[in-house]
Length: 182
Image 1: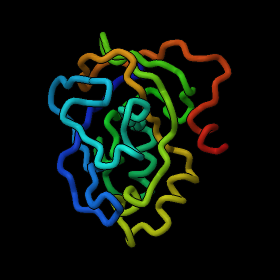
Image 2: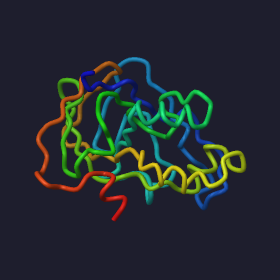
Image 3: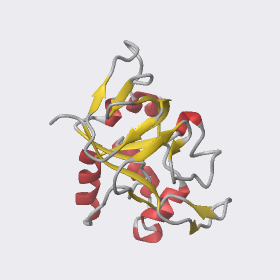
Image 4: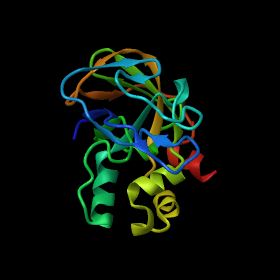
């Protein structure tokens, strides 16, 4: 299967949250049609806590469809694009095996760079189901199906269905999983 973008997702609604910020932007949903990719993320998206989820090195969060399928089976429910709070749902790429510094071209213009793994947090635990999924953060981390944060190198426009080309990355750089495990 050739790597491609299944969905580009932006915040659907800011939701009240028990965390220190008081709201969360984890509720992401697919955009219909093209969406602009800017230095700090997708047009129309926000991060409620830029301290933990945003800025140039965390402009986008990518999650693999294979990993979402794994969790859908584990949790016994469908997990549509955006459910993990991701901006990009992708297929044909093992996101956890992506190397830090690796670059991807999405569509014809956008280039992104893999920067770091997601660190699951309490907001994510509350979003997934709170008391219905006890120990979620530890469980998610233990499976090492984390997804990757991306820096935008070349802004442009993307759309669901766009091809993703993995460009050269630094030889010997650690993978997302290796960085998380260290």
